[in-house]
Length: 324
Image (cartoon, rainbow, N blue to C red; front, side, top):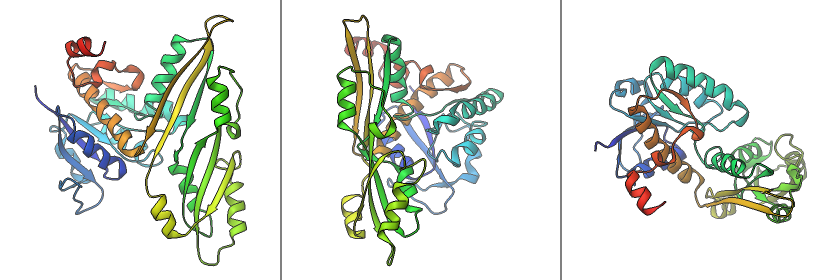
């Protein structure tokens, strides 16, 4: 069987992770890595190609995995790239997913291409768990906890505060809230009751520590609605102790089948590297998109639309024999 020919667009944390994931997939071949930068060589020694030349590869790539950000990259790149390629992306701005899906679906169908949006662990694997658990246990409530892990968005928000030289923020589930949910108490929980935010901050010389701490803790949409702890550390300590990108979380469905019988369903993940794991999910879905595109499917899809067996490199016979 011919290998699935993969292209990578963007060579940041996600792009590096996809390169690793494709190298571990025996049924895949990395054809090209595209960036906006010149003279970039990947960790595996591949010379990157300027994105301006990407259309020259439209007949040489089965699936293009897009590794840009959701804020500005994907809304533009998505509809551009799906004109010529079958695509996979990790668009994660939840409120804008319906709009993004509609735009991608329209352009994909016009050009006979297939693209899956919002792939990763949340949205992505956690979305599947919420759907599956809710279908099995309709009389109940969903709870999603994130962490302990680094929040890129909140870390960026810290670094925008005047007087901050560097900083990182961890999102941490509160044990008391988790305990109530796992005990099938079906609590109603506020954002503050579910998560704690812990910040490690390096100050600029001469910065007002109290002012910086107050501005962080009272920042709307990021910290004002949470219990927030701010630690001031040296630049060396930040680099030494907070230089990785761990993450994780839990999806829990708590409900009942009768008044007497309660049930708790849970999916949990613990990740040493958020981008590397997300990249592995993207790569598995690239396999599925290649299979579906070969069958003639076009338009935009999500994780809800993909047969689980299409994610695997194993044959249906192997899956039935060894995993069913």
